[in-house]
Length: 163
Image 1 (cartoon, helix red, strand yellow):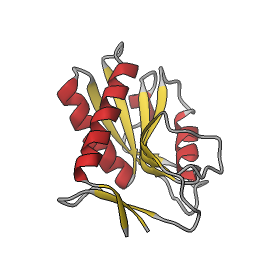
Image 2 (image 1 turned 90 degrees about the vertical axis):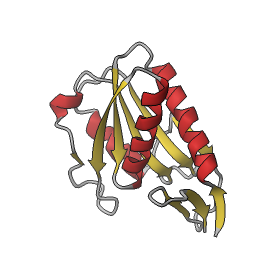
Image 3 (image 1 turned 30 degrees about the horizontal axis):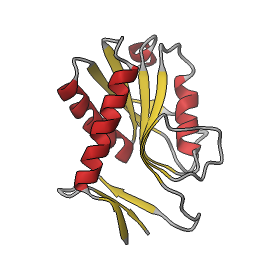
């Protein structure tokens, strides 16, 4: 296992992404951070903590559940559609691999009117099968299709590694 991001590097990426989000939404009073379960939601919480420490932007967390094996199944969110309608939203995941999870997440949120809609990922693998991009990304990495990115954000020493 080859560590590509250690704890300190992940913290740096989170801080940079938080500043990018703040700059993008500086004319707003609040932003919805919609993290894809499970690692994407942990990443969203980390960004929310950082965003609240550097700005007066109010963050609203939303957990997004997508069946990654059956992405056509209905997407579930911890907020009702009314709670994010006409708001600014960032859809967040840990790794952008093929783009399947992110594109179905984007599709779900397009069913309601939003002020601004952006995407953020910790690692962008550059292997997209769908026309989706990350507006904010911690690291872009060209890998082979056989390689796997493992992200652990829950432990005392968060890391991202290439297998």
